[in-house]
Length: 235
Image (tube, rainbow, N blue to C red; front, side):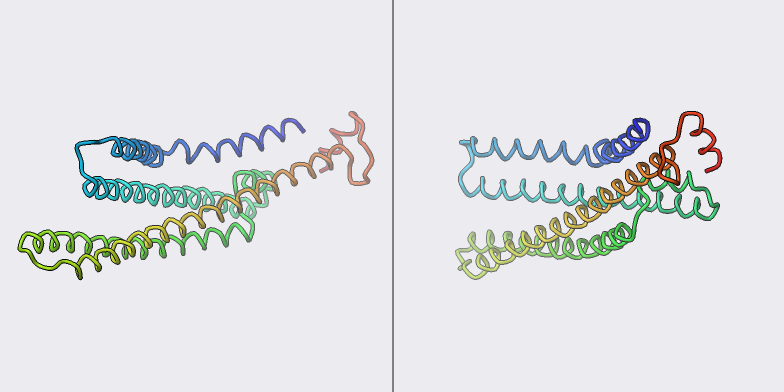
């Protein structure tokens, strides 16, 4: 029983380390940490005026938002890849009628119907997030255009109220699109993780049933040490 428990713990540990050790995620996390420090130091900078600080902070927060999107997209990619590989192993094992291989594949993350649905949902989420990211990029591009036009208009002494109002709306729209994008990806990551957890529990239950079958036998009676090898051989 302890051996089986150790195997399950090892499987779960490997799954957790796959993402934490991923260079893309680690690099993005390091960049986010550096950017957050810049945001903190920005408030202490006495050489910049309020407008410059606000603009710089917005720029830094935008970079953090982009990196968060990168992390969530990478998490989905890694989970999808692992799940698809596990499902392929399980199907190959079933085709060869190898019970042990099927069990190993399940422990490695072969998915139930819920898991398969999560994989499909994650694919849809990636497409939706791309559209949301594209919208955010277009709005950000328009915001940059407006900023340049406003600076030129100010230099000429022209009225900038209308463009300033549009800039405010465009900026809010871009921020919302980014927030929506992160939310879409976050939901997909959660669905994939929940499906993984469900299958881990199913694998543990299968292990327990297998062990109980060996210890107690098909008739529900406890097998003796002499009987157990014979039972296992027959099974």
